[in-house]
Length: 78
Image (cartoon, rainbow, N blue to C red; front, side, top):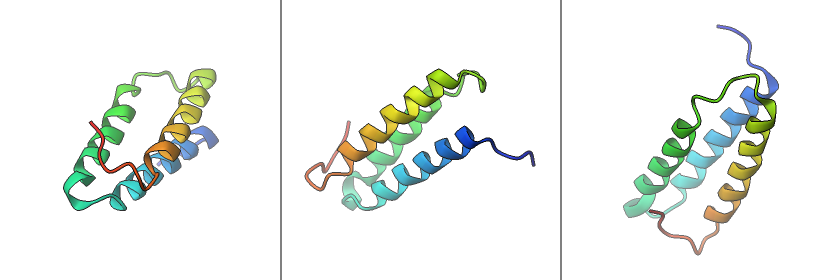
C-alpha cells in the first residue's frame, strides 16, 4: 500500500473523529450522525488529490462542523 500524504492522514483523522463523536450520541440517532458523516465525505470524493486549497478548506469546514455537532445539546441531525 502506498504511503499516505499529510493531507490524506488529516482527512482520515477527521473521519475517524466524526465516527467517534457519533458513538457518543443516543442509540436512536447514532445512525443519522454516521450517515451524515459518510455522505459529506462521499460528496467530495471527486476532488483531485492535488487540489490542496479545496482539501484544506474542506478540512477546516469539517472540523467546525464536528465541533458544532459534538455539543451535548445536539441530539439528532437530518
